[in-house]
Image 1: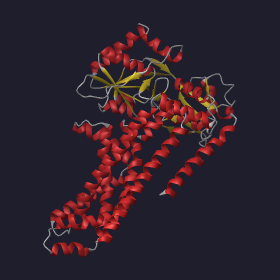
Image 2: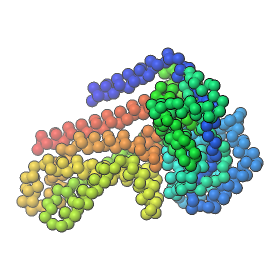
Image 3: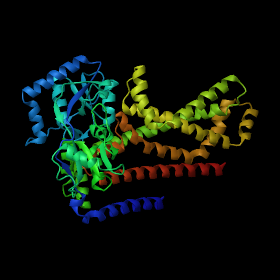
Image 4: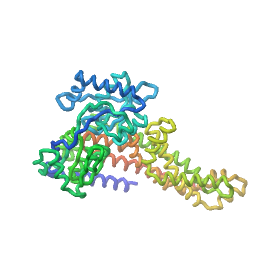
Amino acid sequence: MKRILALAMLIITTMTMFVGCGDDKDSASNAAKVIDIDLTSEEYAFGVDKDQPELLEKVNEFISTIKQDGTFNDICNNYFGDGEPVAVESHEYDESKNQLVVATNAAFEPFEYKKGDYYYGIDMEIAAALAEYLDMELVINNMDFDAVCLSVGQHKCDIAMAGLTVKEDRKEHVDFSVSYYSASQKLIVPGNSDEFDGCKTAEDVVEILNSKTSSTKIGVQNGTTGKLYVEGDAEWEFDGLPASAVGYKNGSLAVQDLMNGGLDYVILDSAPAICITEALAKDTTSFSQKIDTFKEYFIEYDGYKTVLEGLKNTLLIAVSGLLIGIIIGTVIATARVVPKYKMLPRVLNAICTFYVALFRGTPMVVQLLVSYYVVLPLIGVNMTGVEVAILIFGLNSGAYISEIMRAGILSVDAGQLEAGRAVGLSFSTTMIKIVIPQAVKNILPTMGNEFITLIKETSVVSFVGATDLYVAFNNIGSTSYEFMIPYLVMAMIYIVLVLIISLGIKIMERSLRKSDRRN
């Protein structure tokens, strides 16, 4: 165990030293700059639940009011002028209360971003003012951008406020309010590039981009107009570019990859593009500065609270999923080893075989999305992202554990089952008291591997608006525009969790071996 821990720490130390060796690089070559030419013209609006027309009417009235009385200009001044951003707090969701549930992706400064437990941004301040206008409590549900409109369309949230461009395909899920902000897409290039310095119009930029090939990589945020601009879209009359679009969860990751040399260009919404490049242009190249930045967002902005919540959810989902999986897997494995002399065992075997094939044959994230956004709304059941994750992790784990358990049962000498039956025990009693306990000893290491897999796979819960370790540290990285330290700390936490689980499994194995010797 000590050797494993020492190796883990050596790997982490080597990674940090390797990254730190880049401190002497020319900061200009690592920087990024925005080409100040609008490539598109688009309008932002809020997406409202189609089943709440009265809410849409009130939202439109509210937008008109804040534009007329100067409130909207004051909010914008907090981010584009000399004003101070205002922290917005989200209440806990409570179905019994009169609440306005807002879907957002808090990695889109200056429209929505997060520092610790508080939200900031133009959209978030508008959301707070709207909730007050409606005399409702504000609940903010932070999720992947791709899921924002979908969550409103499936009545999980009331309104989507995430720098949304009005698009026809999004109208299938939501009713758009009147526009509140005019936006555009802009090109981001390496800081030392002068390739576009002579460009005066969007046509000049496009002419250069059209001279590229598919080997040219342009980073975009998934689900945004930037991606459509690169790939082409008939609705927007975008011809597309010969370059390849590379999608990212958020714009800051794309710009970071550009600065690292992984991309040739990035195309993002104008305001976030400026915020991201300005933040990344700060002199934070030394390892100590990166640590200071992480400390600031982790401690001063209460980022540790989000991490603790993420750790709690990670363990809750993984442990609950494993327990559910053990129960389901044991039942299925037992059903599949029952002699098929009668019709009922054959039918049960067919059902169990289909179940295993279904959950082993589809990715976990697909199972989450289908369950949360399709199945549950169809049957009228309302569950939180964490609750759905526990259910799906349990069902998925059950399929894998059933095969593990079946192999364990088959590894037990057939004479054990025959001996139990010979002394008058029923099949179920023999399995529960004699066969399965021996099978568990044989499969214990494999069950530990399954638990470790569940711990690591919780990162997919961001698709249903839940927070786990990955989401928590990604929020810190997206807000601070510094991903290295958050990701290294996250890796160390995962390593520690895995080492603890491995140690626990070894202790259990050693204990079982001692009991065998006493017998």
